[in-house]
Image (cartoon, rainbow, N blue to C red; front, side, top):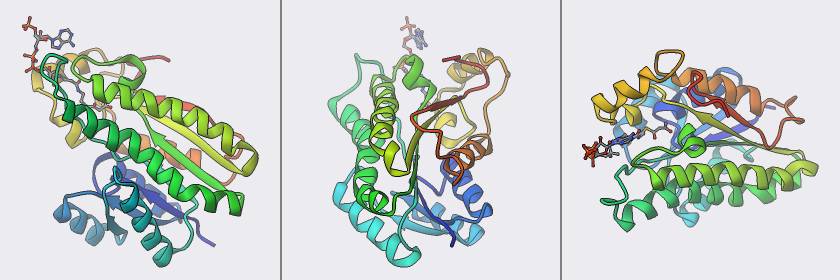
Length: 240
Ligand code: CAA
């Protein structure tokens, strides 16, 4: 029977490529999104993948959303925690709200989604969780104390949860993308982005598909011995 996968932030950017990649590989996919109905509809029309709207920063919404996915597609075997936002500003200018928003969505979302799915995965003795971290959680980034802290938190969260799942058939891994050609990266001021790309040894931005193929590798049924790992995919920008 096809495995059921949920991709948060799954209708745009890296998440869209992951949703499509999983569908092509035979998974039953639910793509979660938080706000952009128009893009979600266009995504579903194009791909035939069902889009489910909820805010991952809310535990109650995650619970209800995952219940809706299970009712439509079946018990969830695979979670890709990809949903993420930026509120970049230097410490001097960053308000408390920008801290809370990024921590609650990027890191709190991982907790909420895993917590909701965890008991079922334990009962079925199978689960695959991939958390999308970031090069900026590994190396830090000027103007991103909130985002770097949340992404760094994801890397720690992954290693801790991997230990809890290891004897129960549940793997938990992270991917740390570098700068990928998405709307999020396009929002970086062009002069700043040019300087960043100049420092990438591969000399270009990454492609969302280049992250999706790694997700497929990590969630495969025969990937049971890979857990607690972080796969850096950044064109050589940070070798960690
Ligand atoms: N290192 C050192 N100094 C820096 C710097 C850097 N990387 N970036 C900017 N500065 C300095 C500037 O030179 C400037 O100095 P002066 O005042 O002496 O001239 C000062 O900081 C202020 O710079 P800005 O005018 O750019 O300030 P701002 O307040 O308008 O913007 C910023 C600051 C929001 C951090 C902006 O520079 C920015 O957006 N930077 C990009 C941050 C970034 O890379 N975000 C990644 C988003 S994509 C992502 O996160 C995905 C992923 O996982 C990789």
